[in-house]
Image (tube, one colour):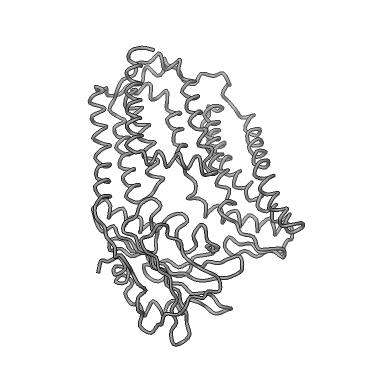
Length: 496
């Protein structure tokens, strides 16, 4: 190893250590997800794969001279700003991606354009260290349910679909998050990207193979869910469940991977012993050279500025009342909470939560839920996976959206016991009230970036469906009596 390589790798090692120390919470969070979530266990294999990919290129890279250059500073700036946005909005995916991009950018910054070009695929493949995919779970649940209905129709099994619930003469089936197929899909995409690089030279073939690695797992998961229902219909429910977890969990998807690889085998157009890179070709790649001290100084400024601002905002006081009480609502009286099926929305680690039932003179009943946060952070937010009217650990599941009042969200939720209710949700952050998750995230982002009020409040108004009675009139009447949702939310947060 030359002196130039030894110096550059030492600098890179120190920079990576500093980045991991500075963003240790994100690094630990990612590692914890890899280890504890079965959906992302495959990420544990990415690090040894990256090592192997670099080792493949080592002999050719040794022929190049590493040097610092300017262009990656733009990538580092995008990574830092992306991390800040993710931190402000409470989006772990953006923070994790920002950290990985910083590691990529610092490697490119210190090793130079030629070496970066030689390491382009390993650097790209680092993105698979980011735990992503859970964002697609609701859509995959819906696709799986619709595929099951289509296949059940072909086989003549009578069935009825209600959101992600499928009812047959045998039983009521729920396409749960674990049945969405996201686990297999994200692992298959990571495998597909690796195979596309190693086994194909043609970009059309690479794109076709990647498309197969996306489409086939989705279709296979729909088939898996259908077969489980089919076995349950013609046999035993307990046997169908065990068959699904044991046979499909360990065998079926292994067969699918083998079939995808076998189908792509005949189209491989890159020799197994082909050189990963060619140093002679890479020597022609050039860029604006920087002194290492200048490059490191510029990178430090770009990284520390957003990190420091985020730390400053996080340490600002953001108090909420020490105690809150259910509001008095004109024309409505507090009554004991005796639902047909227990319902309690999930808002993790809120400072305060309240749940109560009201009844008016007409006999209409509604449930009011309030959650108050002094500030939002990872695992403590109004809008997020598993949060809301039908939490991840709840017996309730989303069925469909319904017509919502202004600045609200309306959804119909249900249980396996065929209990239904409508829920109208209002979220308020820094003067913005909305039922849109995107608008709530933007309001939180604005508050953290510009130093606005950090307090956040969720107000959910819900009514049970009793028989054929429409629950919506009771909700509308209660909302008219409240009159000003904004005022109520600010009062609960101690802002009025």
